Length: 589
Image (tube, one colour):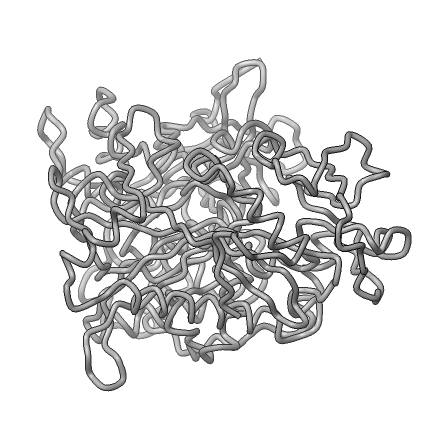
């Protein structure tokens, strides 16, 4: 039974700021610093008012806190605009002046900034990728006024109550409390490391400038060993490269519909029996390479052991440092892993802030696609708090992208997708499909309205009711060269291919699990998404610098098959037959 009886046990007290005379007293200042709520602005505290206090062992000492606002970050602005009374309640709760009846942009902006000091997060473990995107919530006035302490008197946790499909926060005491004692919780619960705690608490407890080195060297060998173990991949034993008859017809086992529909090459036939297949072309990740290499070394497959070093964003950043030192190469936006490199990121952010440099960043989950749970911000608090939801990297947002003029819209962002074919690691053989794909934003670019999806993102084919602008590459090149006559596409593309070559060279430079495994029966197809940004070359010239955004495993080849019917014939011929004659591919390594 739900009994809302917190009022019988607790009271909310407003604490006024300290007088100026007292502030001068050093002992007093020291005392203040030790208190849970540093700073001298008026604040609220929750105290135990029940005359018998609270006993931790009493089963009645567990309380439910309501949630005043539950939302996903991308919907926050719209909800503040349109949900009656929401902005008013949030402004009051966050102590923001708002007296009007109609929501105004200024107040909404303030709530969107301040909410990172009040919100908490949880994630549903089941459902579609969209349903698993983290949910954020703000506790009601009672819950939101519980202050932080390093020695908390209470703990809290979100509880999802299935019968009502509603979430609450559970509050329970960690020790016995007497009347008048303060209710506090640890805002950095679970963090043991002193430096990480300091970082995590920055939104509430200003710690000044972080004195750490913001260099991010490549992680240790143990880090890669741990990734291998976590992925549950078993590395293959060494095998001799298989040799096949030159007119052999290969049996292909696949669960990918686009392959089943499009592959018509006479030297490939489909089989439903995985045991008799010569080629396994799987949609999901293959794990047990050891067993395959021992029992059927001649069977080829469409993935490499340890290829997640390319396709998972935090790994991509760490292996790329082999090419460009701790800052990373010029072809990758500066990237930090928020789980392992938070202090370095904060130090770097603060340095840029002091130098007056652009500080827009993009937070991305390690391995969600389609721009899900991806956020652009210039707020340090926002980025620090995003670390709590799901493992994320934060990358420097490209503030000066090369834009494309769309007649009806203006100068918009665009990105380019290339399909690359990895034939082998030793020797490194990398091909590029001769057609590339373009995606465009729907609104003119500017460094504002950071939550305007159609201005800052280019992935439009999954958003309902949104225009998808399509331009084929053969139309795009003359349009691009007309807009940028000093930058012939052949030169731009040569730089793009140079970046790809460098990426695959560093990805295969070390033995597995520190690099992609040299397994002779492996082949793979990846899609690389990139943008171009304005940069200055070492001799002071203005250049278009490719920026690799991500490498995708088993990409959606729907558009490729639709407009280029021989696409999978070319892919299979290049990867499995070593025949590239009459195929639309170019070898770049």
